[in-house]
Image 1: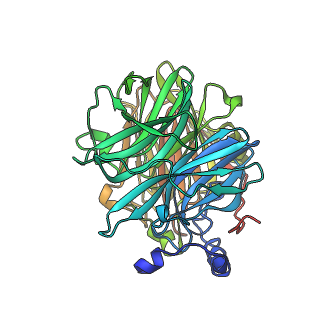
Image 2: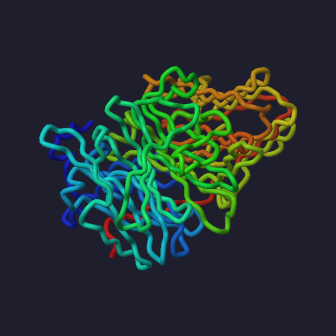
Image 3: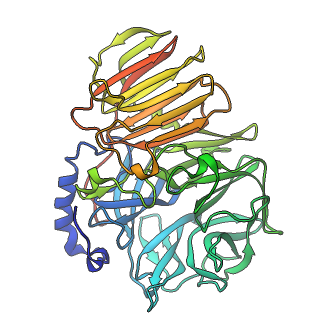
Length: 501
């Protein structure tokens, strides 16, 4: 694998790079692990989703991007759009480092729509003379033609009393003011959420103080990627804390993404949870989620996340010069005080030809011939609450990627121990979640190197896998289960677009 020098990691994209990146794109399009219906990096490395929003009749998503290879180098923003959350179009470079306040990268941020303008707030990252991080909050604006202009100076400067880790601004409007929620680390190396307010988007931002979470005085050494949304009548607070300790299932991955449901008290700078902190995803690979709204969905939000995790690497595709995807969009709602997560409605159109069907355990249709489709949707029902075992991409009698359910403990598990390529084994190769209720249904989305398991319209487990040519079998066991496997019907636009013309 390529060893990257500091100079190579610090490259900033220019038009002269178009030819070599076009060649890189042609190379990575041949990968057997390239997705069929997920957003994936055009070249190089993608990570956090940024600026996820609905504007001018389209969904807009930007992502953290290092164009030149599968390494965390100088971060740019890349732009994709969709009219339906299923078919995505590459739009090209959106933001790159151009000012002294972002000379070490344009880090994550969010979006707000006002007066036919999409405002983008993001973190400009710099290093001081001693190599210490210094972060500024920057502003850009995109018009209806897709033209983006950046303000030359920050709207928020570094705050005293905190380390250089002050990033990932989330902008929202409430009670007659604009607010920015910012992830931070205090001088005692404890994670914090800072709240800024202003009457105007472009200026006047003032630190109001720390937004505290009642009953959770301190956990973790840094809070990244905060997001707060009103879903129906309840507030949903999301963020990605680093350094969780002694939190049971919450600490299995390198880092986590958590949520609270509750009330927001802006006057007293408090979030009052109505329940405990929970994970947004119980799989191996999920981080830095963002929500977006559209009036049509009323009391629901749409969520996108990075199909990966900080401090993790994925050698099979890293060696090909590309890394990472975004998860499928999820519809979020709060029902009976619980967060429901369902695949976006547009994903129903993925289901094409039914190649396997079993009803009450008896096979009705079988066109698989024992081979696992690389891109498919699996719909499973479990009316008798029986134990279940699905082995996907298995080699000979090995387990492959195993999805299992233990009815006596109501536990769903995903296990990738037996795969040829076991990535990030230092964090374990098995994930489990104990359900609040018996397993009734699963929707399983498979896309070459991804598996997303939606359980009971509530719990999700997202995992990256890298099956080889010899890992192609599929097996199932379970009493009275109903299972339907449908081939996936769409292909993401994977055109090479570097600059918006």
